[in-house]
Image (cartoon, rainbow, N blue to C red):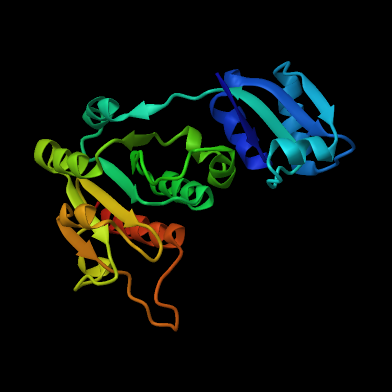
Length: 247
């Protein structure tokens, strides 16, 4: 099985982490870009053939995505499932987990993955239903982070939350506008899972009920909510700040 990726950052991420997965590379004819040239040089040094194509072909293959003149067919990456959780968790004495409930936009999923990678998150959990696919769009926005942070799809998110609490003593913190205290008043250190819900709707009721604690992000302006990827970055890096201060 194979899949397609496109964009300079996605290509750089693949070259840095798994160049052996690259099967074919397609490059826009007559494209001259310094960032693209460095990618081309690295591909050529690895002996990977490059096929020149026109813009129409790239536009069609990327469904008019922002391909930046480069696309690649790659071997399908490893898919993680809920039965992989015990092994992944056993490798982390203090797991740092991001849980995304109802994030259906691939752009938002990719941006959340990018923030998770930057914050040192060990793994991301999403429900199988009502969740964006980890497709070429998400991988482009993730800027290569999709190759470094395991994304695990689970059949029953509520059951997974119970398992994280009961078997691994992980504290589950959900972000919710109606919470009675802010994330700055919460202890976000130790074994931790941060749950983010969909923009507008927030977390589903059952997901919210399985959280140990609900926190909010203080809002001072006219708008009442943030883009979910922005909110995710704020929550993750508050945990990073607290852990750094504690250390």
